[in-house]
Image (tube, rainbow, N blue to C red; front, top):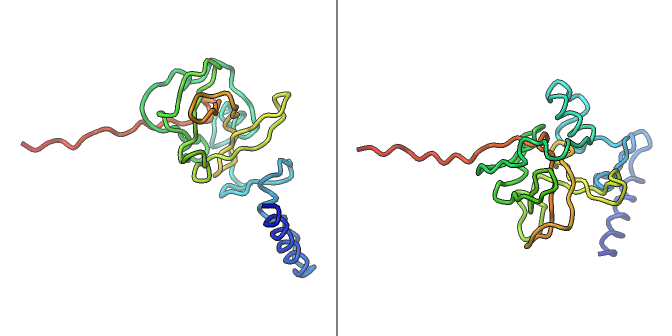
Length: 187
């Protein structure tokens, strides 16, 4: 794997050096994904012209755009047991299935895995994990892959088979029930 990374870096460096000095310099996308710098903006379809304060309630804005946290045991979806899908409140991307939800006793809705995860591979899910030290120790932040909304954190003390506990703020979620309506039978 290190050979691949070295080759990729060499190709990107060569490409960057070959560009004209007149063109503005850009950081390669793969480098930007792993940065947590305040100066780096979203890599997604939403840009700085999206007015999140108009689109979201004050609580949703603080949690999703300013990395806030709702009070434990206060969230709308903490004891929610309806069958369906939890979506991002900012961009409506599907994030977690109700089938992966469980009661962790921590005060926030908890999930075993993200929607779209297959055998531990989250590449098809709508979340990204990012290193986060805001909790006073090394942790992992969970953000929406499509709009960079802060959703919560993931811990490695969850139930089998994944061993993960996604603690997600209720205000970062929007629930959509599964439509179980059957077609009326014609007599």
